[in-house]
Image (cartoon, rainbow, N blue to C red; front, side, top):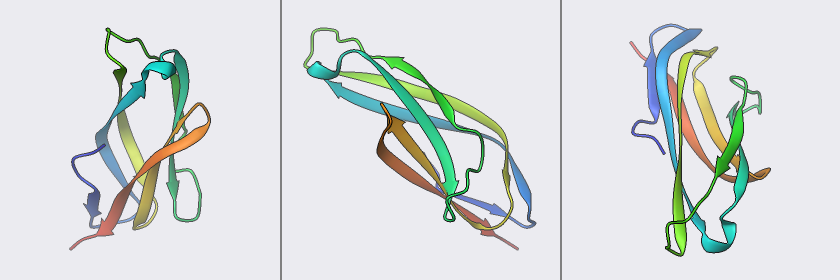
Length: 108
């Protein structure tokens, strides 16, 4: 997940105009079905940075013992009040399965 992990802004609050989130998930044979997912963005105080992204992903095999599914989202005008860390947290079937930090820094 991700090709950069830091956004630098001279002023706060700030708005990042656009970023994309791409997640590649691999499922085992016994997991071939429809799964719910939710992506939350939380700061270190646990506050949500934006409304959660949620939906369903249908996992189908093509004859292999595993299958891959992709979740791809574009997020526009993401607001940051202060420098810090925002974690993108992924839930599959209401279980947290991973997270990725995005560092928000003050620059010159």
